[in-house]
Amino acid sequence: MRMRYDANMPSATYDQADYEALRRSNIPVTLSENPALRFDSAEDAAVFFARELDYIKSQTYDRLYPEFTALTLFPVTHEVPEGAETVTYYSYDKTGMAKIISNYATDLPRVDVKGEPTTVPVKSIGDSYGYSIQEMRASRMAGKSLDVRKAETARYQIDRLTNIIAWKGDAAAKLPGVLDENNDIPVFTIQANDEGATSWAEKTADEILADVSSMLQQVNRNTMNVEHPDYLALPSDTYIALATKRIPTTNTTVLKFLKENLPDIKDIVSSAELNANAVDTNPYAKESTGGKGVALLYTKDPEKLAIEIPMPFYQHPLQYEKLETIIPCESRVVGAMIYYPLSALIAVGVSEN
Image 1 (cartoon, rainbow, N blue to C red):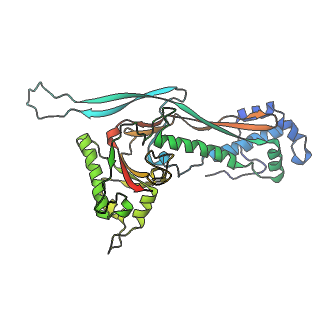
Image 2: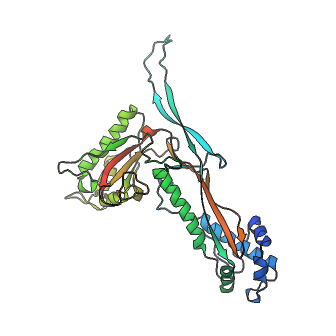
Image 3: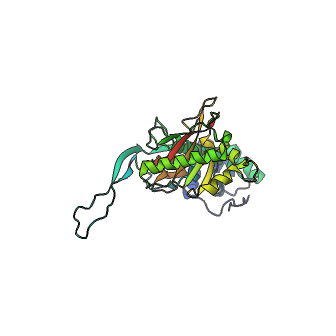
C-alpha cells in the first residue's frame, strides 16, 4: 500500500545519508532563512526534506510497470553478487539413456549432462533526477510533495532498458537476451497455409493448433521428450486477434479453443515486445513492412531460463551541486541466462507488418 502524503511529516523516517548530505550543503540554511517556509532552523529544514525524499523513494520502489513483460513472464533472479564484473554460467544438454540390466550387471550405461560455459559481463544501468531549491521552496509553501514523477521516470527508464536487454540483449555490451540471435534457442519457421498465409490472425483455429503442435513436436524431437514447455507467449496484436475471433458457428474464441486443446500449456500470454514492429526487443521485427512477429514456447522455471539482475533499481543517497539536489539511480544487469536452450523454441512468422 502506498504511503499517504502528509505535508507536515512526509515520512516518519528518513535516510541518514540523505540527511547528512543536505546538512553539508547550503540548501537547508537558505530555506530556513525564508520566514514563509516556517522552518525553525537549518536542521529542521534538513530533516523535513530528508523525510520528503524518503517518501518519494518509497513511492518509486513500489512502482511496477507491467508493460515491460520480460520482468513478469520470466523468472527474475538476483544470484550474482552486485559487485561482480562477469559471471560464467553453463548451458546444459542431458545425454545418455538407461537400459534394462541383469541382476549382476556391470555395464551400466553412463548418463551425463553436457555443459557449455558462457561468460558474460555484469553491466550498470544508471540515470538520475533532482530538485532545485526553488522546487523545494514551492512544495513547502504549497504543502504538497515534491514531484514524484521525476523519480518514477528514473525508475521507468532503467526498467525499460532492462526489459530491452532481457528480450534482445545488447551486442555492444555483450549481454544476452531471450531472442538474441546468438543464443542456442532453436528457431522454428511458421509454414504458410493453402492461401499462403503464415499470420495466425489469418489462419483457422485448426491451422493454428497444428502450428503449435508442430512446435511442441520440434521440442520433443530436439530433447528426446525430456523438455516440456508450459508457456506460450504471443505478440500482443496476435493475442488480441485470437481472443476476439470466434470459430464459425460457435461462441468459442480461437484463444479459448487453443487453451482447451493444449493441456500441457499452463497459459498463453501476451507480449507487445514480440510484435512484428517491436524493433527494440524483437530482432525479427521491422518498423516498416516485412517484419516478423514471433511466438515463444518456454518453461517458466528459473533452472531453465532466468533474467539475472544482480542489483535491482536503487536510489543512492542524494548529492548536491550549488542550489540543486541530485539523486543518482543505478541497477546492475546480466540479461537472460539460458541454462537449457532446448527447453524453449522461437517461432518466427506468427504475425507480420
